[in-house]
Length: 351
Image (cartoon, rainbow, N blue to C red):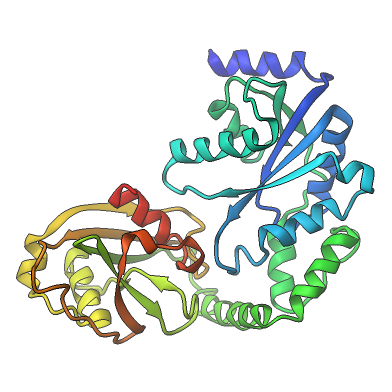
C-alpha cells in the first residue's frame, strides 16, 4: 500500500518544480547518461545536490576517481551559471548498514539545505537502484528519468583502466579531461597493472559452464582496543590494510580455514585452542561487488581475546601478507582498507 501511494505521488508530481533535487550515484565516471539526469534536474529545480558515493575510499578498480575528480567532471560539463546551482557532496559508503547510510544521506543533504523539511526530492534513472530509494525516503518525492541509451559506467571504466580512451558519445569533455589527467599519474599505473592482473585471473574461469562463486574466510581479532590487520603483499589491493584471511580448502570447515589463514598470514602467538574458545560471533558478507576477482562470499569470525597485562601477542607477516600489525581501533582509516573490510569491521565491532 505504501509503495502504491508513493507511485501515485510520483505521477502527480511528474511536472513539479522543486527547490532541491538530489541525485545519488558513484559516477565512476560521470557519463552522458548521468548528464541527462542532471540536465532534467536543472530544468526541474533551483538547486541540484550531487551525492557522490564511495567517498573516502582508496582508489580501486571499482572506484578509480576521487570525490574531487568526479565533482570536476560534473561541474565542468556545465556553464558557470549552471555549475553554481550544482552542489557536489561526498557520500560515505555504509555497506551492510542501511540505517547508517540513510543517516549519511540525510546529513549530506542537510549540509546544503540546512533543513531537511525544505522542498526536497530525489531524481534518478528508472529501473535501477533509484527505485530502491523510494522505500528508504518516503517523505521525499522522486523524479524518474529514462535511462539514456542504456549507458553504464562499468564498461567505460573497465576499458579506461585497460588503457582505452572513452568516446565523446559516452562522456562529456570534462570527464575525458579528468580521465586523461589521472592517466598520467602513478596511481593509474598501479590500477592499470591490477586491471590486467584481474583480467588474466578471470580468464581462468571463462570456459567454466557457469560463473564461479568463491568462498573465503576472514579473521577479525580484537584485544585491548586493538585490531589485528595485515598489509597485502600482492594484487589486488597491494599495500592496503586487510583482515587476515583467504580461500577455503576443499576439506576444511570455515572456522578451520579461518584459523589456518590467520596463522599463515600473521603467525599470531596465540594457541589455536584459545582462539576457538575466544570466538565471539560470525557473519556472512555477500555484497555482489565486494571483490574485483568475481563473486566472492566471505565468512568472518570475530575473536575477542582477553586483556593481558603483558601486552598484545606477537605477530609477523607471512604468506600473502607483507606485514601483520596491531592497530588501535581509533586509527582505522577507510582510505587505507581493502575492499569492504572497513564496512565489515564497523558492522561486527559496532563502531
